[in-house]
Amino acid sequence: MDPVSNPYTPNAGSRPAELAGRQGELRQFEILVARLKKGTTDQSQIVNGLRGVGKTVLLNAFEDLAEAQGFLTYYHELTPDSSLLDNLARDAESALARLKLSERAGRRVREALGGMRAIKLTGPAGFGLQVDLRDVSEGTIATDLTELFLELGKAARDKGSGIAFFLDEVQFVEEVQYRSMISALHRSTQKQLPITVAAAGLPQTPRLSGEARSYAERLFDFPTIASLAEGDAREALAGPAGKLGVEYSEEAVVAALEWTEGYPFYIQQLGKHAWNLAEASPITLEVIREAMPAAQAALDRSIYEVRIQRATANEQRYMRAMADLGEGPYRSGAVAKRLGKPASSLSPVRQQLLSKGLVYSTEDYGYIDFTVPRFDEYMRRSMPFRVARKTSAKKP
Image 1 (tube, helix red, strand yellow):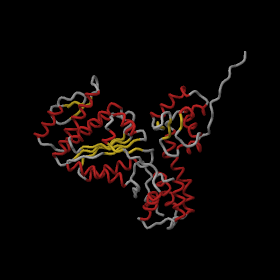
Image 2 (cartoon, one colour; image 1 turned 120 degrees about the vertical axis):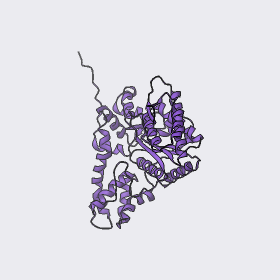
Image 3 (tube, one colour; image 1 turned 45 degrees about the vertical axis):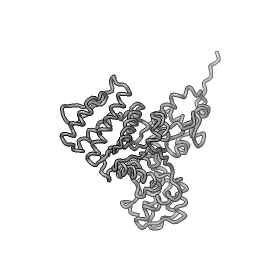
Image 4 (cartoon, helix red, strand yellow; image 1 turned 60 degrees about the vertical axis):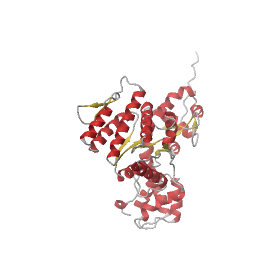
């Protein structure tokens, strides 16, 4: 097949030709935006799941839906070094400028924001904002961000528009700033203003949100997305090719679904390589089998190797010990035992892996798991397991 016409897109965050299995989440967000435009509210969404299951793709689709309804949208991929407050302040500057407020409305906004201490107006005119967290309490941060959200929402409402923030990798947000954002959105929702936040994060995100603010569980819905059900996985594989007049044999589809286990990024990679190898329609079982090694190699490079390279030697050994125990979740004590070390001595390594987002704490206390599906398989394939040698005291 012509590789230029290849309909598969195994790239981080790229929307596939067939966004299968996510219709419920898309419809829910579409309803939210429509209700906000009418002056009513609904729950937004914080999508959670492992890496590579399509969270970023879904967040981008949400953004497209909001823009189609005339909302001003702002997207951020967060890191452990990100400042959510800085990002939101820059977004507010941009939104207030884009709304083209009248002189009277602009003066009212400046007066309303003039008393803020953590997020300060700069300059004699306009809406320049600067974040300064020195000598301010959490209460001040929450109050200022709430005031900013309220003024943004009112200005957008008066202009027949709305504001939507999209936060990817939300598990990295600093706790005080996350609590403040939830408080600000909660108050804006109470006032029925057209401002919302949608986010995506790892599986611990619902727990972190509930710990940040108890009412977060009422403010947001927390859909968990994972591998696709069989029918949706079929559509994700066969749908893009079908639109171009190319079919798969039933044997090829069955083998592909078994190999990919319904994971979207596996489906995209296998589909891409099968398409490039196939000479005619239908794509056969033989083509699928021939494509599997190339697809696996591409997956190893794109999602596994880039993460293992971020880990130190000790962190790699810890993850290899996890993988040696089989499928997760993994009890921290069992990992320590497999390494032949006290659990307490490995706590710093475990914490670093959590901080880097390579593993996450499950709902069960004391258990962890990989943040990428099938990472245990990759570790067993690519890295031999070695138990630390015990040194014995020399005899005098």
